[in-house]
Length: 111
Image 1 (cartoon, helix red, strand yellow):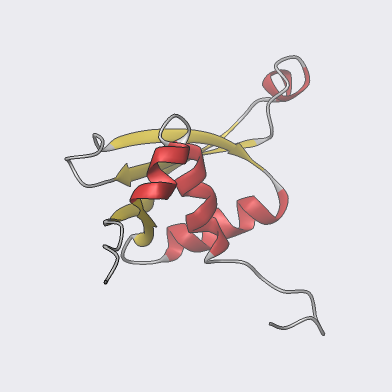
Image 2 (tube, rainbow, N blue to C red):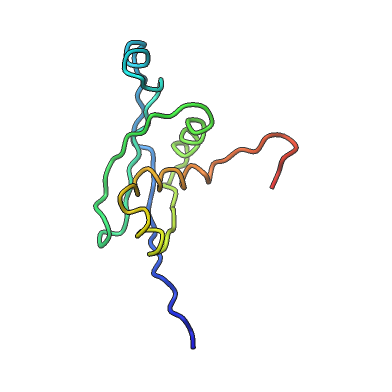
């Protein structure tokens, strides 16, 4: 008997905008120096397309810059089980998956 494979969802992720925070926002507001606004476009049957702003720094910020330099959006593919587990936090979780595609490896640690 062949078990049904869970349905897979393709979610498009692109960088919409970036914003530098003031020193006051960073010090008093506890923000990172830079926010990136991502545009997320899931299949309409599971969620609405939206913008989602995330405060980033370090390697995650570098990954977001590389994603923003792509002429086309990145695609993240998840299945129904993943969606059921992450439906409350899907925006941040999908962005994390998209940024993983732009991981850089330290010298000597490939693979």
